[in-house]
Length: 471
Image 1 (cartoon, helix red, strand yellow):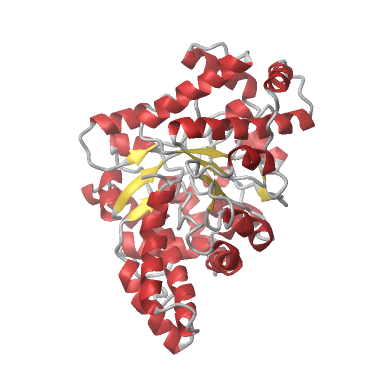
Image 2 (image 1 turned 60 degrees about the vertical axis):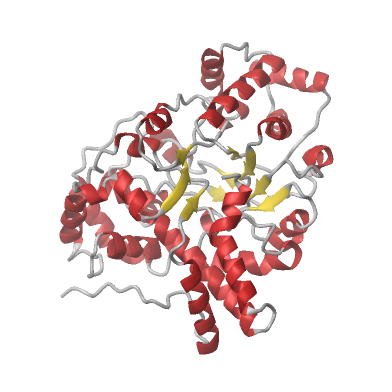
């Protein structure tokens, strides 16, 4: 016997009746607003080709490291799920069999954000009304896979159905952006833009750095083994990305360290880096200097900077060797911002033309460092609760701990930061519900009036991300 699947209309709202009523009223003002998705990792090829998604497994399981990291933690091998390996191969696994493994273990996600997002997708996108489990696995697989072959479920149709106003993908400087060019030339009205993520060519400890630097030079025609040529190459690629719609850069550094070296010292450090002789401390200093150089470039080309520090990426060495990057083995680190950002802020922090959006995986920094920094420097803004904290509890803690020093208007609303395309409406819905619940509490406590809360809710859901990302 199967169990009904239901999405309660009051999910995530306060249990107190009076506050819940306020949250409901606020939510009605924002529920249908267009989705602004200014930072994420969807595949632009989906929108360029508009080809049907293959099946339920390839769309909902294989790309989603939130899902398969949980399964892996319970002893399910990535081969059993058909996850691609680092060399491009993959185990010969029937996608239906992989889906059955997922369904059999779906109980592992109870109470997690993944269960909320997935159940929202199952219910709203595919009209499923029974819970996913071992008994319903095949029915789910067939109904989702069949639906994906129909016109209403092509990538562009779903983009329009989800009421997405704009979505940003993320590419390295080595990408040719042919899919973005195809989208621009297709006549389709959907707005899909890119973002400049230079990690492979700015991190000396990145396993692809030597080959990436070589390719960087080939693409730009610059001598990227000299400091001046290297910086010109970045400016050239940034200009190309901007022509492909980019309004932002993104920097996934291990720390938030910045530096402001004299030009001669920067050149000497770069010479050590390109020789492959950098120590860990020199590699960190080089990444720190690059953030300041990127800020300088942003003043020239108006690209917004995003800094996503504080993650020990690919912590599981054996998994990394076999499957490569982004396979669920990234772990948060303690991160310091006050001293780390000072060199960049000493140079640019008082210039309101520069937008720097800060993220963290270290929640202890919200009230101690990040909110006071953003509440002072006109350059700084706070990105929303990110990655491991992209959950109702994390979103609530973010608001609680940043409001006093940063207010609402030194934050940038919500960005979903996902490669799981179908979960985007669910993620934005969760963020809107939590913000309305939080604002409802402030109204109930007579800290803001309800008309003010309505304006803030609309700003957080729609206006602030557009403003922060210059969209």
